[in-house]
Image 1 (cartoon, rainbow, N blue to C red):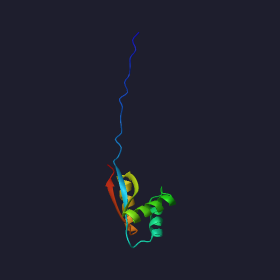
Image 2 (cartoon, one colour):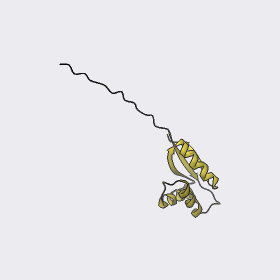
Image 3 (tube, rainbow, N blue to C red):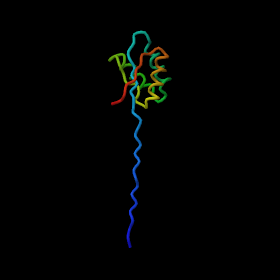
Length: 93
């Protein structure tokens, strides 16, 4: 009796490259407005996370908002810009 082994070909899906959405400090938007805009733009953020991001940008000049797929990153970046905030995206290396 012979046993036949079936080998299952592994199909590994290549993950979409991730992008970082960055918030830059500015001198004209209030801290409350920045927090509110972050919360309405990125629904997955909590109030404490939004405050932390705003404070990091305020203190260091730049803060990471979220890392996500390029399409989402572009959307978040453009939405933040449309509310008067300075935002950029970059590939997550």
